Image 1 (tube, one colour):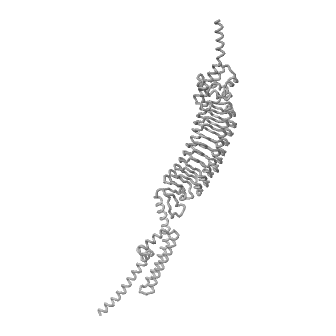
Image 2: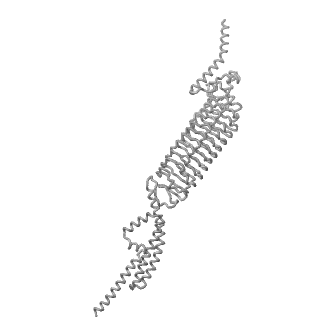
Image 3: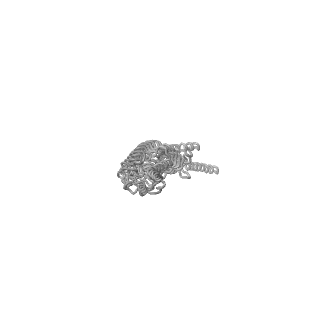
Length: 540
């Protein structure tokens, strides 16, 4: 009996033990400590090596493919869990309602896991994109090649800062070329100062149709290709200040239709080719300050119709005829510290609406005939603080409406007859100049007639007239010599009107002084002869 009882208890114990083991297996399959059935099933199905391989493949797959693969995987796991529980149910292992309950739990948890898996996939894609960007930013002077940049809003060049207001800042980012591939196409402002960019190719910014401000200061730009800025219809400000740019080639700044300010100051620009600003008709301000500009070629500013002010460089050696053709609406043109020896004929023709031309503190020595021809509506021509030696005849021809010509504080030494023809006497201002008051006094008076200029223009020589006004010198000379206007005018030789080329300033002064002394000696010869005859008669 005891043995039977014991055997009975052993059989119940073994059955209970089998039930307990089965429940534990189900628990291991259908419940997890972290609440994720799918992850638990995957941990029992695949070993560690397989999981690592799948994880690497998962990071390399595109976003949509990863999401679809995750959904297929979740459905497969749910199918496996349901099949296992159904097999337990059909085996009738005395588990009661546990298999059916576990099946419902598996289905519910699998559905939640499927939805959360999709959201995790999107989050992982975003994290992967951020990690890829930060990896590219740490690369020095090299444009990143990350393929995880999904949307334009996430684009940003390496070592640059991209702000929500469409502003791109790439200052001192070590760029050797324009990183336009990685700049959002809807950018409004791009600042790439203090880099090593050397070339702006054709159509470099053609996709940035909303760009309004572009700053490329302090780079190594030596070439701006033709049509480099074509397509920037909304550009308002463009600056290439402080670059080693030497030539503004034809069509290099074409297509900037609505730009307000173009800054090309502090470069090494020596030449402006024809049509450099073609089809950029609405430029309001152009700055060419501090450039060693040697030549402005014919039609260099062609098609710029609405420019208001042009600031020219410290040095301009040559202005060709019609150099400013096309600047129909420019209102002011200013030159400071020019190095040009001469302003040639028709240099300013085409400036139909210019109000004021300023040439100051320059070493322009000669103004040729017709230099200011075509300035029909000019109000003021200011030539101040220069070293002007000669103003030729008809220099101001065609400036019929000019109200003021100021030749103030220059060193004018030669006003040839007809040099100020076409100007009304009241607009001629020559104060602060020192003109030789020799035989040229007569025609100088003719040039300055009916004006107050003779009262504010001073004599440089001879010594008895030094620092006296031209008006005073005329009165003294007429009183002493009692010569008429025509006599004084005809007594001057051709070399007295225009100094020979190659003469130094001292040679010119010596020549004028010698001529004056010769005329004084000639005028005193009859008096000496009369005294000599009188003395000889008394002696007899």
